[in-house]
Length: 480
Image (cartoon, rainbow, N blue to C red; front, side):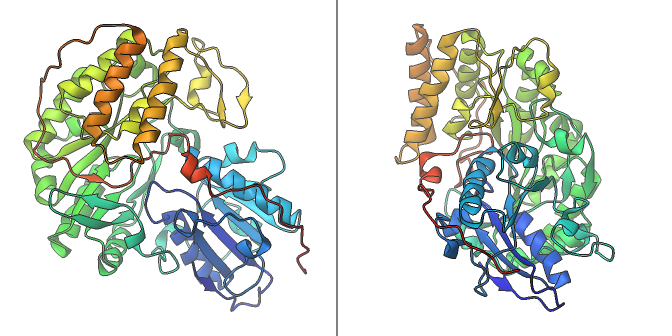
């Protein structure tokens, strides 16, 4: 946390910007805002509550570092978990400050946050959205292009407080950057196309490289590229990787990349591995062809296997993200998914929470146009439209596996051990005899991973929610 004071005579603008959860990384959105606020010289304080762990129960929890109360509260809502946690902070702010504060949701889930009655005054999808500066009381006519400013991370907790890369021999601090915003794809379950509509913007290569230089200077030994898909602009991505490796030869990295892009660019993976690529995150989602088609993923089960083999041949592992429970999930295709994980040596590549994830359908989801799904009403607590499986036993299994995953967060068990528990629970629940385990493909000896094991589409844990007790703070008046 840090504070910067106004130097432009706009002393009454006091901005508190809060992040609650960014997948274990420094919140880049706050760093981008900080560079813009520096340009305008306004008073601001950044709080990453995943580190600060504030309950926001009292007025003092909202004070800026200079002692003033905020006139504007920005809450970062890039994903489901962050929105659930951010909504609780907005509730505290309304209880304490009433209408004396402007509460703004910022991120892909901004409309979801706005669906909570009376908590947020307005919302914007991105840090450079038109109107955001005006809402903050800043003159946006001479504003710089926000994505032309190097994000200012000096007000954030050090990267030592965040996720670390776990290798066979050590743990390394991780820096987080993005080379693009938006995405060229429109997977129907994803919140990104709702905001970006199949378009993406490249961030200037020099900006990205300057960010990486700063992160390395501050201790980063590994870089995560957090783009929705790092190969949306393959030439842009490869040039960044080559220059990064030239500047920092010992630096390793990971990136999120679609299966179809892995197969479209088979010639780059040897070089990417030589430049430090240890693993990619890839949204496999499922092995059911019906589900993959419904989600418009652009790949098949056989494509997944081909991509696995291609990458592993180059020494690169895959950390798949999964979406096991959907309206089209049934006993057979779920068991097929479980067996696939074991058959292709993925039990150490996947965080167990992934196997219990249930499809979330936020506002404006592209899935709402699917006439095959009977959606229930909007659930303001779940922040999703309701749906039920045709087989109640499938919904029951999702609850069982989610409980196993959440309980595992407090145990030293290996992911493989937890997946064995989940596999046993699946067969026991359906009353089906377990077949012998088989192995089709084998990965590399050690599977590097990040220490953060929760995901954007997973419900918040009780530990995450436990920060927020019932608020009894008094309302206060802010002098205008």
